[in-house]
Amino acid sequence: MKRIRLERWSGQFLPAARPSCLHFRCPNVRRQSTVSSINPEIHYEDGPPSFLSQPKAPLVSFPPNSPDPERALSSPKLAALHARLQLPSKLPLQTLARTLVHKSADSDPRFNNTSLCDLGHKLLGSYAAEHLICRYPRLPLAVLFAAMWAFVGSRTLTMISREWGVEAAAEPGVEVDPGLLQFMRLKPGENIEGEFENGAIPRPNERRGWRRGMSSRIVYDDVFGDHPSSRDKTGSESSEEGTPAPQSVSLSTASASFVRALFGALYLHAGRQPAISFFRMHILPRHLPLHQLFSFTQPTRDLSRLCAREGFESPVARLISETGRRSRTPVFVVGVYSGEDKLGEGSGGSLDEARTKAAAAALRAWYLYSPGDIRVPSDMEDGTAGTWKPVMIDKGEVVV
Amino acid sequence: MPVSGIRKVSTSQVSVALTVHVHPCLKFDVLTLSQNGVAAFILQCKRLDFHYCDWAGSSKGMNSFLKHTLPRFARLNPSVEITVSPRPRKHPIIRGTYINGREKVVCVKNLQKEQILEKTHLLRDASGEKLKRVTKPVQSINESVRGIWSPYHGAGRTA
Figure (cartoon, chains in turn purple, orange):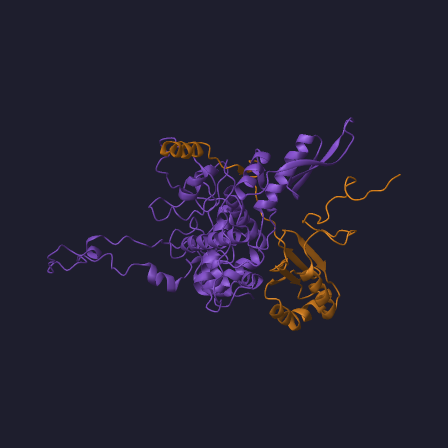
């Protein structure tokens, strides 16, 4: 006859035991005591010290919303993720579990990934920026910002998280497997735009209707050169200013926060070098056709300005070959020459189109110049790097 | 003399404008594509589920596999999550779940444990894509280095 297993029943229906967390989540104050916590006989001459005067804000979020960190050790999903990404053994499974908890699931900053996400966002931005700037020193700023977005922007990080095989929990909770991404999902009909509002940094001159130029994008905006409200943010800035944490977020916001938090955790636990090599393994080899990002309004004018600035002979367009000039579908091949040197070549249905394409090709070739051996500043943080050879710094893009 | 200098400075300041833009269609859609295996390789098999039956004879090999072979397989493949669960009065199966969201199921009824290990390897190494006939040996997202052949370049050939 089957025996009823009471211990199993009790385990199922009792609230999950969280001994280690309960211990330090509850403030060490006996709430029902009638004695005031501060001894009234002590008189402070300069007024009571600050830690006594302000009532202790309860840091606790009780009941806990995220799984017990101890359960991370026995989660097969988490162990598989750790092995799949070949993370160093210095990064413990408990921290990996913490990177998977978005702040909409657990608002307690000690158990969600907000702080790690913040650090990871900064790290990713600096690694990507130094790589792009050292590798392509002549990249125009608009293209540089777009490339930054392409490498470490939220949408790419969302894709990366999916390609790593991270699954999301349907609903956050204590009982959820710690290997699942936990966040509060958007309800049907909920406004997506609401989550973009968090963390917007007001510009000082915004009310006066000042124009947003490239320089102001450098000074005020995020690493992607964009106003924080216009694109999906890291979602990390909102926490410290006392604004409430978002009630629900989209899957892409939560996934991006996981990837950023993983970089932050890797940096904290394993150190600088593993974080950089993880970046070089997973982010840098991604394919980005940089030459397709350029858009020129008047390439012929830009090219002649560039030649004047650099002291080259002024560019001349010459017809290389043509066919069917009198037909319905003529093709002209035009090269742009500076003296004897051919700067670029383009073909098109009219002479003007071919000349414009040739000038654009010449400009692209100029802007996408890459010096041979590339060392980035963060290489020097390693003690055995030797002496620093300064990287090339360009004059900048053509200004008309 | 100083007057002309001032005028020069002021005219150059007025006409300053940056001329390179990112195409407006691309602005929010610039993405990088992953090239799995270029630096890091992510095994595409995420999870393997082993289903067995305690009673049925077709699960004999599977039960022996679970007892003797699976612990070693799991140790050698830490990046695959492995679950074992009964499926009473049914043939034993192995189900692979892949990163692209697809699943692959193999029925292993009446197989020996060595044969089941082969099937497990097959599921582990699969990419999860639908099986396709590969006619061109090389697929690439890079543009061709040589470009498209053009009749207007080179020596040409006279008729």
